[in-house]
Image (tube, rainbow, N blue to C red; front, top):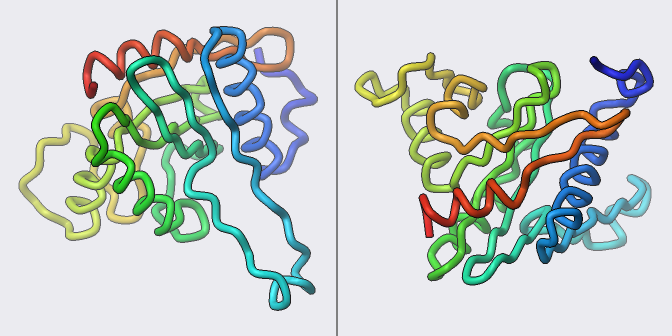
Length: 188
């Protein structure tokens, strides 16, 4: 059941709530985590103050792996490739991080309107899909429909790891430790 209060939040607020719930789940699971908060600069000061661009939203560490993660929460059944949603520097930073031994980097996509389904998609799998989608390559391995401007939930189900969750009273609890252990087996 969806809490009625939860529906009144704006999309950007829902993304911050998702990040908080994810962080709290890491803490409850006893994982070392660090959430990097975005710095807000009012528009009238943006030309005077350089804007710091965070590489990722989150780090999780469970020996021997480090997980740099970018979290995205959407209302729709897809996550747009638009620069306003997934920034080029985020993709580049995740790709660079994944080159190091013991580092498992990627996106965590949360689909709020689809029973809060949440998936980890490794940056290499994301880039492979994005290449197929944007170049409209006819021959590909995906069963779900390929969309040239976004990654749909069906593709995330195919190439990602589902992160189970449950709603408590009004907030979600994610099984992050199970995800981290499964990701370490698959990608470590």
